[in-house]
Image 1 (cartoon, rainbow, N blue to C red):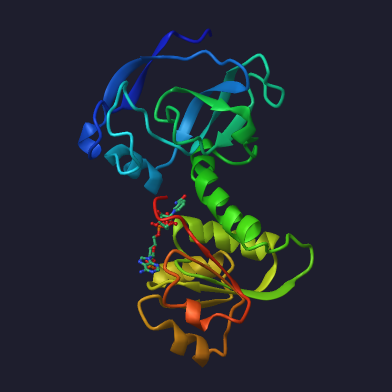
Image 2 (image 1 turned 120 degrees about the vertical axis):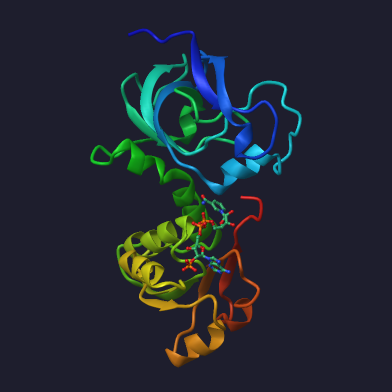
Length: 251
Ligand SMILES: NC(=O)c1ccc[n+]([C@@H]2O[C@H](COP(=O)([O-])OP(=O)(O)OC[C@H]3O[C@@H](n4cnc5c(N)ncnc54)[C@H](OP(=O)(O)O)[C@@H]3O)[C@@H](O)[C@H]2O)c1
């Protein structure tokens, strides 16, 4: 079946709340250069979506309908003339970029350099939940903190504030399965989030609604790395020469 020329996207004509989202007819773009055209099968909602929707990330004046949506999973429909990594029919995932039209549409253009092949055994819905949280966790733990990827157990310890959140869950998974850290302390406050963090690799769990110091002391715990948006209370508890990473406030 050939690609139609227009599509019905979920878009907005002004920034604002969820009530600004509406169905809008827009052209289906043709891929050129390194772009691929993806038939989007599933998307997920990320904090960046509502920030972009509300205009808090800037660009308040909308010259054309704005399609938000960053995380996506789909099937390659067509490729630009310089594309070498993908072909029509490939199943892919990606997190998109802020300055292009998003994934809340049947068809979306994305640069092949930020796309990966979807694992065959994952559904599109499961896959769409992963790109941005995984990238954020990887950038923090590996690119910024410099924790080495290793086949052997790493004797160092990591504290993840907000272990059960989207980013925290992927940080736990990477820390335990890929970085093989011996001690991974996560924070969570409810029975279900405590169980969740343990399932994804926390060796110890403490409660972020209570002072952290006494809980760490009680379990004779210290940490070399901390991954947190809420770093200020714990920074003083950190081992000498540890490496804090702060998540960008806007994202
Ligand atoms: N999602 C992304 O891809 C992404 C990317 C870049 C940056 N960020 C930023 O990273 C932050 C976390 O995002 P997320 O999507 O991972 O979070 P999320 O999924 O919304 O996190 C929800 C969890 O946060 C925990 N929480 C609530 N208040 C807390 C506090 N004061 N201290 C520690 N934990 C607390 C709660 O755990 P309990 O229920 O156990 O209390 C709750 O289950 C946000 O500021 C977001 O903007 C997110």
